[in-house]
Length: 544
Image (tube, rainbow, N blue to C red; front, side, top):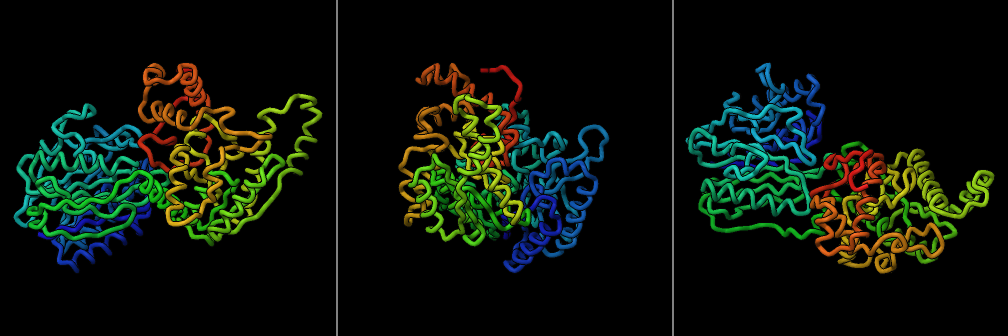
């Protein structure tokens, strides 16, 4: 039996586009003489569709896609994920389902049982969990259909759930098809393989795991679909961050002793994920060109480099906006970076605008000393200039704030936090430096001085980040323990950090929640990004 995996980049709600991709893949599978082709979870509508699922018309369009695929199944079996209507009045209106189509019939439908409701997932909001589990017989083989999370409770070891769906199958099976929409994080690819291997070793049967690829606003799917042999060896792992269609001979997968996987180094994966995130954000919204402020610092430099690689140098424009506090080397570093990448740049000095602001405010401010107010005015002038260019020319403004700054509120609302997409706001400052080195691995693109000089917002004379923040090596570890590892203050202090510093940093994270509510979507590359996967109250006393 020949089995085809179709790892595709879907577009939420673009039913015609998604169907066209699937029909093209079916044609390719037929040319390979494949017996069966498998697509990902909720492939007809894209994942995650969220509250679009509440619209009857949305479900009708998905059903229309299933109907078109049914008609295309004359000579090949098609397995595809889609929402389906729950005919029972009690419970949720929909199931998250896998349809098995063959000879222009819906031969079998298996619903998803384990509905993740954590981090970025909210499936129990929409779907009823499956209560029946049956294999489907096709050309003499018994196939277990499962959907994403259904393989993540092996032997009931996951405390979130009470059943293991593959254990519930009423008959033995010959292989597993898993239709997934597994989002990227820097560690997910390794974890995913471990889960697939644990399932394969438990049942001693091969698994074909089909993942999405592409970005849906802030959520990035990395692909990495897998054909795994019964011995737990990876027969083939499909590429990361690329569409791919592969056909496998079941007997070859069953008999194989090879294990072929891809490198899973953190920084290259983050680099490629962000590039795909930018590319799809622009492409799926119908935009081409980006604008950002280039300061000569590391964050804007890395953002500009990633945007250029995603969109092309002809589609990235930067503005250098020096003030009287900007050092000459910062302007030179920014100009050098723009020239290295071949992107357009303009220089707009903001001193005159800044002075005009202070003049108009002087009757109110009187002789009050210079403080963060004057710093924020500079940031907001820059934000206004960038948004003016964005509005005039239709370019999308990219936010250049990193995760460390986003966490502690080291950014100005309506100033440097402005933008349509937060490119590196899920990348800690220490990893931003590593990204810069990786970008420069084949030759200097980001000036060395931007990487080695002490970081500074340059909003007052001789300002450095270290004036108000601890060294980033220390700050990032405290933030990581709190945000990703969900460690409280006493647990972090027990790791050897200064109690006063921990209290101060955690307080900064909590009191700046209101800023994060108002910033652009954050491309997710960690296990806990700011945005839809982290829901914190603004008005709260915990650790305040």
